[in-house]
Length: 274
Image (cartoon, rainbow, N blue to C red; front, side, top):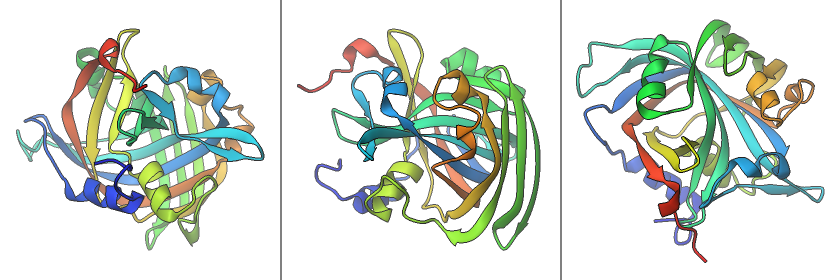
């Protein structure tokens, strides 16, 4: 069911309750040091990346229309293909780069991925086999954390996709109602709980995969130094603008399922309603 018939809160609750599986390749992992660093970007800078039948989720501020883009860094802890073996586990850092979209056919909210950097040579598997926009990166990370709050969170990564610098700390506040959202329930559903992701494969094909996670207990953080080269390459933000984020939210741990393999969709079959 979509937001045509359910509230944001009901849709999020259904996403949490309906924990499904796809195949023997399904993954279970614990994400540690999870962070959502978001920026407001004029729609005109992003819209051409989003194909039919999708549109950007947007909001108006001072007469101009904006979308949000996010860098989402974390550490995969005990990543395993649990239906094959729970004993064989992997740990590595990862950063997803995404924006927030609406499927015009169903009005459901989802994420659009521009790319992912992965601190493991296993990044070659999804890239070569499934054409996912993943790139190997080397990571360095230091942190201090007390009672679930970061007094120090410093991450650096280098990749052909783009380098990154993250230096943040928690403010001690819970996640506030952020600019662009009317209610906390709307914010949770759109920003922190997109369970379907799409990405570009070619002029004729898209890829998609699904995830599951429980509700996040997110805390507010502030920027000390931020830079994401990919966002600069794509023309979304300047180096200076990256140190003025829309929002930064963190949680020390969150459980995740990743439903694999991803699916390939032909663009010609994705019809937009009249």
